[in-house]
Amino acid sequence: MEHKNINLTLKVWKQKNGQSQGRFETYLVNDISTEMSFLEMFDVLNERLIKEGKEPIAFDHDCREGICGMCSMYINGRPHGPWEGTTTCQLHMRAFKDGETIVVEPWRANAFPVLKDLMVDRSSFDRIIQAGGFISVNTGNAVDANAMPVEKDKADASFAAAACIGCGACVAACKNSSAMLFLSAKVTHLALLPQGSPERKTRALNMIAQMDKEGFGACTNTGACEAVCPKEISITNIARLNQEYLYAGLTADK
Image (tube, rainbow, N blue to C red; front, top):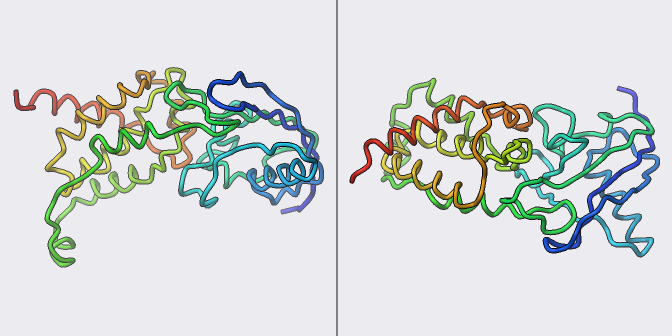
């Protein structure tokens, strides 16, 4: 693959805090290697801004390996940018053309208030997990745990759901800011395994109640969440979540 440098125009959302009014600011970046990641490009820009005595652009990042889900950016109208199944930190500048203008925004959702610039508060996801994302089971020793039978199709579906990194792209893409794909992945992960059976009913009820409390919207059934998910979580999990919720509601102790 040919290595080259490109020049870009960035229109980046700047907002001092959650109470301030935000605005787009324009930055010109030159000689950006197409082998850089999107976040490395931001690093180069921020280094220049600091040298010029200007305030750098605030954005979330951590592992930079597509695992942690921190790199939440809306790039040209799409969460995590143009590549499918890719986080922002794994998006490379070869995805863009020389002279292109790139618009970068934070997630837009009431449940994800802006902290500063491109950083949003996603602690609502943490509270949903805390509401029911646990199991209580005596695992015994390693032999007992490994001897617990799990059907392969259920194990595979659970593993696929567990790939969710909680980045919030599904919420950002949904016109109702629904967290159903995220929540369905978390509920499915444990509901399909015997270790998750003891709290199966209360988990679905409590986590959905917390999701509603946080102010997320209803599912639109348009599939926008699945289309932008960097881990390609399937919306079939939402159907399973609805099934778990209905089952829990009908069989709950009165």
